[in-house]
Length: 70
Image: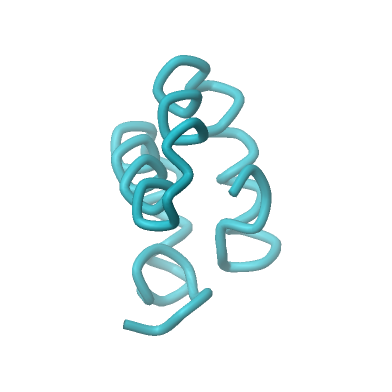
Protein backbone atom coordinates (compact mmCIF):
# COMPACT_ATOMS: atom_id res chain seq x y z
CA UNK A 1 0.00 0.00 0.00
CA UNK A 2 1.32 3.43 -0.91
CA UNK A 3 1.48 5.92 1.92
CA UNK A 4 -0.20 9.29 1.52
CA UNK A 5 -1.84 8.73 -1.86
CA UNK A 6 -5.58 9.06 -1.65
CA UNK A 7 -7.65 6.39 0.00
CA UNK A 8 -5.58 3.25 0.64
CA UNK A 9 -3.12 4.04 -2.15
CA UNK A 10 -5.79 4.33 -4.84
CA UNK A 11 -5.25 6.74 -7.69
CA UNK A 12 -6.42 10.33 -7.76
CA UNK A 13 -9.57 9.78 -9.81
CA UNK A 14 -10.85 6.86 -7.72
CA UNK A 15 -10.08 8.72 -4.50
CA UNK A 16 -12.05 11.76 -5.67
CA UNK A 17 -15.00 9.55 -6.67
CA UNK A 18 -14.95 7.80 -3.30
CA UNK A 19 -14.66 11.16 -1.51
CA UNK A 20 -17.70 12.53 -3.34
CA UNK A 21 -19.88 9.55 -2.34
CA UNK A 22 -20.90 10.18 1.27
CA UNK A 23 -21.12 6.55 2.43
CA UNK A 24 -17.68 5.58 1.09
CA UNK A 25 -16.21 8.79 2.50
CA UNK A 26 -17.63 7.93 5.91
CA UNK A 27 -16.43 4.33 5.88
CA UNK A 28 -12.96 5.07 4.49
CA UNK A 29 -12.51 8.09 6.76
CA UNK A 30 -13.36 6.11 9.89
CA UNK A 31 -11.15 3.17 8.88
CA UNK A 32 -8.16 5.40 8.06
CA UNK A 33 -8.51 7.31 11.33
CA UNK A 34 -8.73 4.05 13.31
CA UNK A 35 -5.62 2.73 11.49
CA UNK A 36 -3.77 5.85 12.64
CA UNK A 37 -5.03 5.29 16.23
CA UNK A 38 -7.17 8.44 16.10
CA UNK A 39 -10.18 6.88 17.79
CA UNK A 40 -11.64 10.20 18.91
CA UNK A 41 -11.39 11.55 15.35
CA UNK A 42 -13.09 8.40 14.04
CA UNK A 43 -15.93 8.86 16.53
CA UNK A 44 -16.27 12.54 15.66
CA UNK A 45 -16.30 11.59 11.98
CA UNK A 46 -19.39 9.50 12.66
CA UNK A 47 -21.11 12.10 14.85
CA UNK A 48 -20.48 15.25 12.79
CA UNK A 49 -20.17 13.59 9.43
CA UNK A 50 -21.09 16.56 7.17
CA UNK A 51 -18.15 18.62 8.43
CA UNK A 52 -15.69 15.74 8.02
CA UNK A 53 -17.13 14.90 4.60
CA UNK A 54 -16.55 18.43 3.32
CA UNK A 55 -13.04 18.71 4.77
CA UNK A 56 -12.03 15.24 3.49
CA UNK A 57 -13.41 16.05 0.03
CA UNK A 58 -11.40 19.28 -0.17
CA UNK A 59 -8.30 17.51 1.14
CA UNK A 60 -8.52 14.72 -1.45
CA UNK A 61 -9.13 17.15 -4.32
CA UNK A 62 -6.29 19.50 -3.36
CA UNK A 63 -3.66 17.11 -1.97
CA UNK A 64 -4.82 13.57 -2.88
CA UNK A 65 -4.55 12.53 0.76
CA UNK A 66 -6.38 13.06 4.01
CA UNK A 67 -4.32 15.93 5.27
CA UNK A 68 -6.72 17.72 7.61
CA UNK A 69 -8.55 16.40 10.67
CA UNK A 70 -6.16 13.48 10.99
